[in-house]
Image 1 (cartoon, helix red, strand yellow):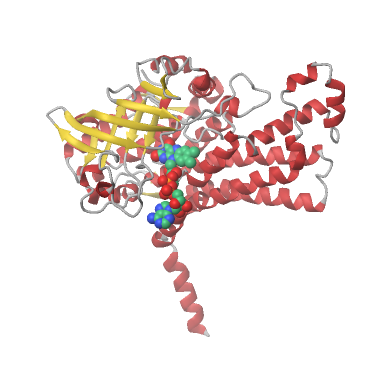
Image 2 (image 1 turned 180 degrees about the vertical axis):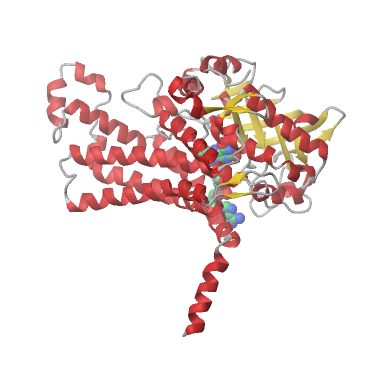
Length: 483
Ligand SMILES: Cc1cc2nc3c(=O)[nH]c(=O)nc-3n(C[C@H](O)[C@H](O)[C@H](O)COP(=O)(O)OP(=O)(O)OC[C@H]3O[C@@H](n4cnc5c(N)ncnc54)[C@H](O)[C@@H]3O)c2cc1C
């Protein structure tokens, strides 16, 4: 089965998985009111793969596998293939206004990156390297949707994993047998875990020290694996309130904690285990950063573009779009948007071939610039929504259906703007509020600030690894020499 439809994706989720919401087991995640709209939004992504206008961008014939696969799974061997991947990411991101950070393409391309670096896993053993490649092929063939959980619980940062007051908290190997490894403990934050097909686990940040070997594992299992439990945060979904919560009612990706209760991970799903040296090298050396940041920066471009358009409409609704100070605000939003937009194109332009596997990798530093600036730009644009909306953002009726009641005339008069009637302006401001005022909006700011890891560590890594540093230092030295 390659290239699934939305209906096939949904059917696959009725598998007896153990998901808990507010302490109670969810019997069918596809019918659960708090998940239904997000599942439908994800199903729509799968359906888009079959639409004539998108088919050749979103999917591609894969000679290696002998069948058609989702574009994110493709190994990029040319700059044109990188461009096609970006187009595919854009189409899916536009379907969710950039609001689903963990749409299937994110982990699918991560998996492609890991499998493409078979040589890295082969340093551990040929068996584990084969397992990695076979797993990638299985997911690509079945067109699966993965979640991932990298972090340990936020415990005592002054202690290593095995030194915590309860050493059973952080996920670790507790036993092994001829079938596989037995893992026990907790991981977070697995976005979309309640309705993903599989979970990929690898530990982050890559700072393992001697003694932490039992925690250093990379593996993947189906979400209905025995002993795997998913605990949800409060939903921000507002089921059925499409007009009043235009984004949260459709795109609230559930974030979850995953608990492994003596879970058997079969050997063919173990890609590395109990190896702190390889784990500390994995994030960098598998080059997953290049391929995933190409997707995440494309998604962020779509999201910033969406917020920018809302800002323009708000300025117009207030009759202030041509004022110099407002033009300055909007111009700054454009500058942020264009910087992020440029990162992917610049990365493709400067892409280089990796002699190890022949793949074409987009430029790391062009992409990392986007990852470093996204956490600054997104909150900045959200702040602009608050600035332009002012008190109008909390002057909204409880529901737009109030325009169908006896108070509609007064409502209309109290809300109309410049060239826009009261109801349309209320709809626009409800959308803005969902971006900048609701719990969904707050979660998105937190997401953009954190999804690529702690920003300080990211920036320090950029400086540490910066490949063009010497070029600029040499130029400075030449200049100084001529003084
Ligand atoms: C909405 C959302 C969705 C996410 N989805 C996923 C997902 O799908 N999969 C996944 O694996 N992860 C996910 N994450 C997790 C994300 O990668 C982390 O939030 C991020 O890496 C930061 O780690 P943390 O939350 O543990 O924060 P921390 O590392 O605890 O940082 C919190 C604060 O503590 C400070 N701090 C941390 N360590 C130190 C130290 N040693 N000394 C001094 N100060 C310190 C930091 O600077 C920061 O200010 C998600 C996060 C969010 C918010």
